[in-house]
Length: 428
Image (cartoon, rainbow, N blue to C red; front, side, top):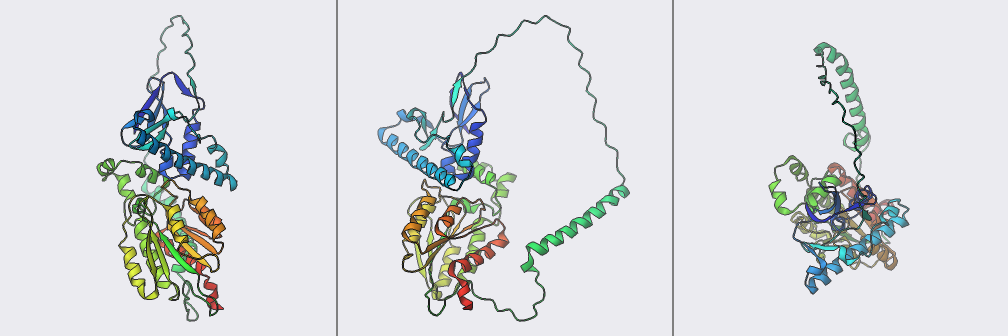
């Protein structure tokens, strides 16, 4: 964290508004947009200060060479455009957060723009006003200093005998075990089935009828750096990790919080295993296409894999490495270009852990796909369970499957595969 500027003699018009808005920004937006707005704080002298978690040397826009100024303004324009699209989408869905986010600037004055390590940063984006003049200190006649009573130490708790503790702990423990058994019976029913009365024949995740060709099937596999985080990482921990410079991550490698976030199983490990199960279960008649990330560069089309090539597909996914950005919007465009979606049904299964992190609007891309390819549906498996990619499924008539439970991810993929490729045709 570093201070960018001290606004001497100024205060925030609404001291609580920036914190409220930044909470919404980090909830709905990737770090690239969340870090766009400097953090206002009251300094030690009472003056207003602007801080950022971005690493690098802060420089005003007018201090940069012309080429760097143009690049910074273009990057700012892309991120504000993505933010505006998000606000429009939230407004369309009736989300009350849209009204709050409307207070953010969409065309800020250039004198509020800084470059921090090449990243755009806006100061004074929240309304400020001159600090009120200090009231004169009234003259007070001297009075005797009141005697401060000696604080009374808290009473030492009495020791409770072991026999009394057992008297109430044992019933509580038995009640807890009973509730735990009931919860496991409900949430893990498939793990503890009743003995079957007849042989159960398991159908494949997806199949085709004799008359209808199977839909074209493309998968998007998220290989962004956040996939290295523990499967149960919270939004707060992910934001803390994402905004930390790499040297600081190394220094904190042995801290309890860092070890918890980077512990196994990671999102990547869980995703690879679940994908392998999906690939083995899809009907042999269905070719599986695969698109992966390459930072914020053009996504990689790994190809289409027939039934005979699935061992190669599974091994290739197991060899993937998670690193860098999240070009979700570009990946959707690439995957959509691989299928028809007009005269023939098509399905994209996006296995992701968040929103686009490369300055593009994945919701707008999904809307365009829905208009251009009406027979293309996109199902989303969201392993961060934060709902940042729900709009993709909503725009294209697909479904969202979200969980941070490692044991449930494979079940989600099973349901997503059935939903995507019309497994109901199997019984027809």
